[in-house]
Length: 89
View (spheres, helix red, strand yellow):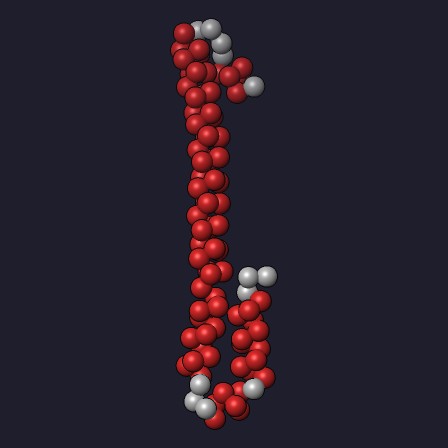
C-alpha cells in the first residue's frame, strides 16, 4: 500500500512517455518517484532493524541458555554427580 503512489507515478510516466519526453521532464518525474519512495524506504529500514535486533536478541537468549546448561552440566560431570551422557539427555 505504501508503494501505491510511487507505482502510480511510474505508471503515468510510462503510459505518457512521449509527453514526458517532449517537455524534457524525465528528471522531474524521476525526482517525484524518488520522493514517493522515500517514506516506504525509511519504514522498511526501520522494520528491518527492529526485526534484526529482535532475532538477534532471541538467538542470544537461546544460545546463552545452551551455554549455561552445558556449563552447569560440565560442573556436575567434573564433581562426579552425573555422567556425560546424562547431561546430553
